[in-house]
Image (cartoon, rainbow, N blue to C red; front, top):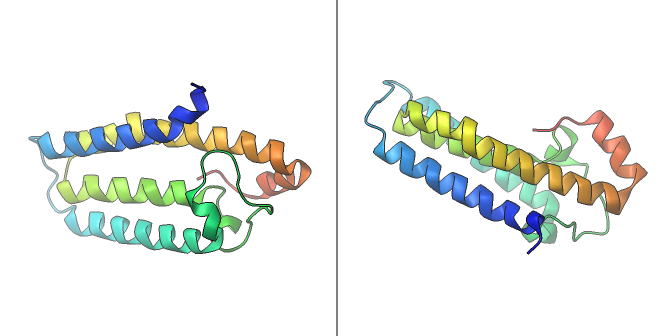
Length: 143
């Protein structure tokens, strides 16, 4: 099995472990619920916004399945807005639980799994779109 095929699985496993940590964390930050709900809501909106621009490309693997590079909408501000939305949702869950260990798990497990998948996807996009990808990457931030 190719290692890049494991990237989606790693993200899901990191997310699930993150949820378990939040649920089992005996400590609690007070007063973070509303902030967590805001992050969760904003992440969900960004996810929908980005998915609308990708349309059928939304359900792709690491390899691009569109014939054009999407650079409009949320893609003009950050390279993988879907991954940014995922991170906002996970951080929102951590804050809703008030879990300092959940936040730590997000930083140590979920964020690296998202960056790993984003880097694999970027390589595939560079191979597929060449100079067009390079120009886009120069003017747009990662996450």
